[in-house]
Image (cartoon, rainbow, N blue to C red; front, top):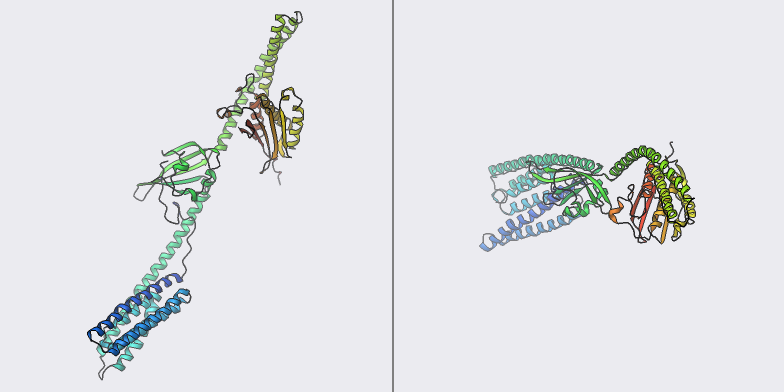
Length: 541
């Protein structure tokens, strides 16, 4: 099958997510940011402080005490970072951890600036990094609080540690830079926060729309199948699973021809026979249409299909009923035109035969005429029974009792002389005409006996959903598969002297009862006829 569909993304079908995506925990973004900040701090401290300390020691540009101070700061930073890593692993109290991390970075910057000359230090920019970190972690309030902490530590300590004439211009420039960093970090972080909130709202809206769309698609009574441009299944809704017997899990991503090759590639409306996972042959009506992308290009095809098996069976029953009505109108005239001449011939032959020698050739020929006239009369009678069946007088009866009574009579019939009967009968309530059910069972028994069966098994049992099931199975030659669809047609017979009306009458009676009769291969090696009758209608109120 060359159908295709929109390729499904991970976690979603071609028509939306099968399950709504849970909203992320509010702590999740902060958790990720804390992890990245910790990593950034370790890399920065290692590169800047470790590299500077090593360079000063090896070039003689710093006294050993300064280098030792760098090492101590490195060790303290690593130790504090280890504590923060353990804290972060608990995934608890993340906001206090963020404040502690901001405070520790301000303290780290102060320590580094203190040992490298305060206002003359090249590491003053670390205060700006701490302020930016505050904006990243806690948005505007984080940046403003980091700025306040920076000014509260850096300005007084720089003034105290400065010479007699404090470098006020440097302090002013540094304070302005810190304030500018805080303003920029606050602005950008707030923009990021608002954008994140809007994005989260859009994601929730999209998830709601997707869930609604998925619910609609899954609630459709028709099957819906989509296949991508490579011929792989991407979606099968719940109704499609029920009809085909296969699930989306086992078909998705696999070639559609493996299961759905009955659907032809041409777009439009059509019908096809489809064998589902349960081995049932269904009559499916389907519509196949292409799916188009945003630019109008064909990116796949979809199939909407319905199970028309019952509908077509009902149409067939209606057509059969219409044919019966026409045959019924013809049958009355036909019976009159045939029976009167047959009766006249039979009477005349009977008179003539009384005047001839019973052992003569004439007597033998007259006997043949009488036998065939009787056969013709029986054919007309059975045709009338089929073409103009009596409306069933239905009642809530125990089908097992009707079956037992019929079998007790049948065993004494000459046609059953060579047949061994097996009974598997259980009480089963059915809404039917008892006399017509006797006729149905009798016709099926005669059909089995005439098929040269040596054993016939009759079963009667209640249906799981209500009603009754009657089975007649034999060990005869069986019925060829091509003949099974035609044996209920009037005058179709595979027997040498059969009329072709016995099984047609069975079909007619069951149609009037809104029941069904089917034929299949039986476990005894012959044919098995299965009759299903509906339960009694529920009483109003």
